[in-house]
Length: 190
Image (cartoon, rainbow, N blue to C red; front, side, top):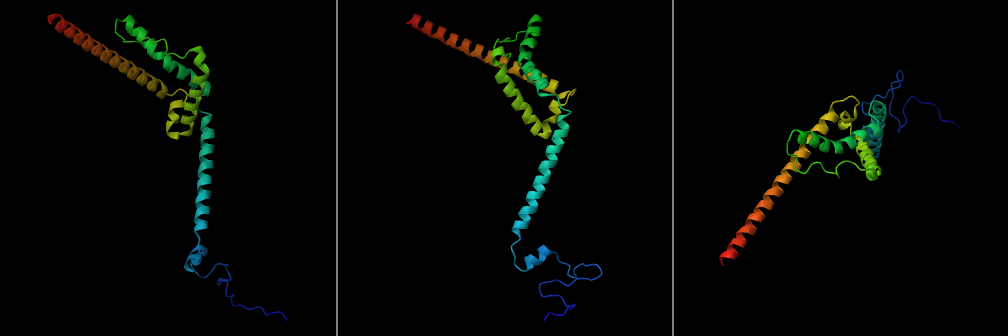
C-alpha cells in the first residue's frame, strides 16, 4: 500500500509558497541550523577560505597584468649597479670643483666583475620584493621619476655619512695625538 499524497509538509520540510517555491519562513538555512544548536563554524571557515582564494587570485592576475608595464629585471639590474658606482662618480665631479669628498672614491664601491653573479641575485631578490608589494610598484615603472630620485637621495645620504665618519675619525685621531703629546710633555718634565 502506498501512502496518499498530502499537501501537509513533512516534519523535516519547511512550508513553501507553492507559486514561488520560496519558504514561508524568513530565516536562512544557516540561521535555522544555529537556532537548532547545530555547529556551522565549518561553513564560516569555508566561506572565508573561498574569499581569501578569490582575493589572492585577483591580486595575482593584477600583478601579472601590471608586470607587463614594469621595467625588466635586466634594466633594474643596470640601475642597481649604477647606484653603487654613482657615489664615486659624484665624488670625482666634486673633487674637480675642489670639494673635499672624504674617503671617496672607494675602489670597493662599484660592483666588480667577480661580484656580478652575487649582485644579480641581490638585484633580482629586490626586484621580486618590489613586484610582490604593490605599494612599491612605482619604483619599477618605466619612465618613472622615482628610481632616479631614490638614487639621488641615497647617493647624497651616503656621501654625508662618509663625510661624517671621516670627520669623526679625524677628530678622534687629533684627540689621541694631543693626548699622546701631553703625556710625552709630562714625561719630559719629570
